[in-house]
Image 1 (cartoon, rainbow, N blue to C red):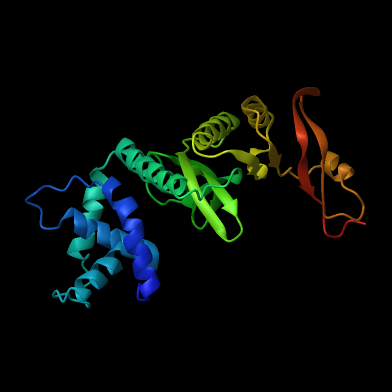
Image 2 (cartoon, rainbow, N blue to C red):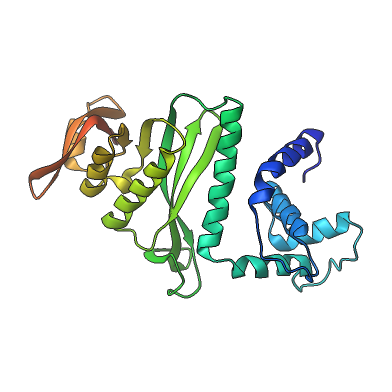
Length: 271
């Protein structure tokens, strides 16, 4: 729960940047206001609660009548979710971009942006149990009772004890074309706001077409290599990892080269 004075001060400071960019399409005759939705969103984000729990907690703090034993959805949470469902993907993206631009405007005005930053690009899959025709749902390896998942890629600024999500791209496929386009879009957006020192990518991006795109964008990058006999041969007998010059090949013909080296992990029982 948000209880400490420091947490409340932080929430107020963040709200001045975040709230002006949020719109829910609330009509003037609605039971709940735009401010109600902003407050419940802030609460559930900080407390890691579901909308239903956050709605009940907020109404209890306002001394409103709430039936805690009821299994029905909280009316405030129900109204919030209804308005979120009516927003188009474009409207949500525009609001995310607006908040991000405001954050960087504040950082620049306070001269808190470093000269260069390290960024990481990651793939995420959130397990999904609904219809396969849902937007941005892909078929993936079976786990937790389903072979479907929401798939998206993120680019985050990484620093000690800090991780800031600068951009997110939904993905309708998990093949090399989708990954290449995601990397291009994420890096082009990031370069509008920060100067990048290194880009770190996990083994899911260890593909010729993705590496070629990184080369085209002229960024320094490190990609974790997938386990293979060729990569194991490049690992020393005593080192856990190694970075070296390496040429990715396809059909035995070099198609993209790594200027700064790939990283690979050696088996722990390697002698």
